[in-house]
Image (cartoon, rainbow, N blue to C red; front, side, top):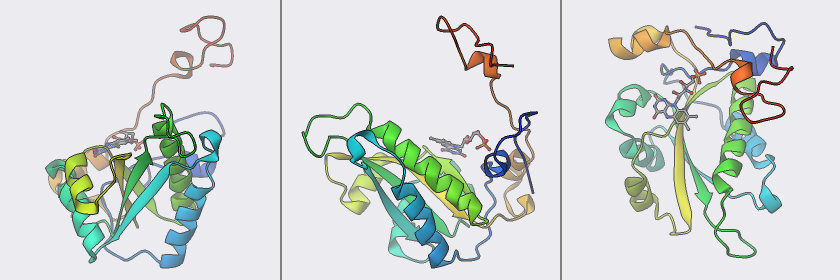
Length: 199
Ligand SMILES: Cc1cc2nc3c(=O)[nH]c(=O)nc-3n(C[C@H](O)[C@H](O)[C@H](O)COP(=O)(O)O)c2cc1C
């Protein structure tokens, strides 16, 4: 099932075709694909090149997968149970060199996940990010140090037909995608004033 971005602009095909399905095939993901996906994340830019991202990767059947799954909120557990790979993104809350608190680490981690997402698409896989999980459980399960913060979990794998999902989620797969308009996002002159580019 495809749900391309609804746009008249000629954007990159991987960006146009990306969306967040909830229906994943239990078919395992090849290790070399996962290696390229994490390598792509590694090459994202970051503040002072400190790369404050770390990833716990769970492959279905292993303990890490079970622990990531256990940390998900029940609503997400209902659909993420067939995902062959679960990835928890964890950020370093302090700069490595100065040990000062960082006000930008979440931005950096998000950027590495964006790179990871695009490589995931390139590999013929799909991904669905989640904020709905228990940070407390994640910290306990994985022994995450106090100066690191779990930020998101992503389900990753080959897409399956919506019909394998519980009805409520199958319906969501068919829901139309939407975005704010460019003129609500791209400004010039004063904040809130649409740029002439935003057409
Ligand atoms: C940081 C973040 C947290 C999200 N949390 C959840 C979540 O807990 N559960 C869920 O089903 N979807 C979650 N989503 C998916 C968004 O709902 C989805 O990306 C958004 O509706 C846009 O849809 P699209 O990705 O298909 O374009 C999350 C996405 C992001 C980026």
